[in-house]
Image (cartoon, rainbow, N blue to C red):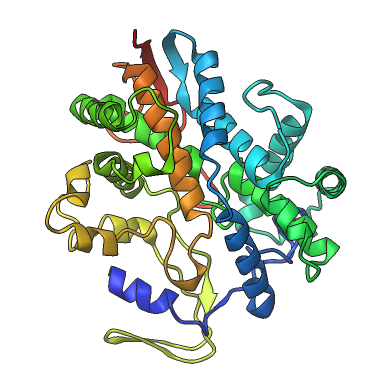
Length: 396
């Protein structure tokens, strides 16, 4: 499918999400009254509130605080499992700035709350139960259901704490909206958390996976790392990162965009249906046919992308930049594209720019990613590099 065809489909306001199997315990965790699963007027209301809350302010200062905390843990460098740090960093980023709660994932990677969440996600993401949801009826798992319900209750308690102690975050903003029911609030808190930690695509782009990818690629392409470091030094110097700095860093922006194209965070969209036949180019899609956009295929299509299997940030700088921008869809297309796009991009810009000032790094010769980036199995079709070992050296 071409980008134009995908755009034509995703911009169809008559499309609705296919109702996914009710037996899946994922829905027991997330509920169905959130920006991920909602349709119609409820979705419009939730999307508007989340968009406005996320654009109240871009928390550059807090991203910088968390970056410095990460560097304190990295110390003078050595070999580090970088994808572990990106997941902890992204969780604390979404916790402190969006939910308004510090999960202390950087300080306490094995904290009780995070460990319980991992345990629940591992259970409900069992491939057999994902691909054959009816198993929940045939071979029910009461212990797993109890685990899910217990975690949902912890989120409800977290929401109450936020009600008692409001702050400058998205959840406080949602609490200010009288149209939001208690169930809607709870469900959105949960999918927002999942967006930051497990990086479930419907809530937020897979920022942790993106941060793992870009740092690996910069380690693999030393000339790109040197060039983007020079740009950061010339624009930001030793100053604290600010929004205006990043507006003057075209190469950093190109590197981030190319890394997200090269190993796109999410591979497919949620299935959608149309009540009417849908004309897409020369093809007619019959009514009520599930439609899935393969974003991986679009981002590696040889028509808009010359040598798509080559990591080449220059494609976002040259004379065809507008064509490249038009085909760049890691955040989706149309009215339902990810509302946290700016949040995710600035989170990446802050951490990567500050990392470049503090360290240089290379890829171990025995890296499992040398021939191609290896992504962990994901029942949600996400690209999450695993075992991303990096050899870090602190700059003097």
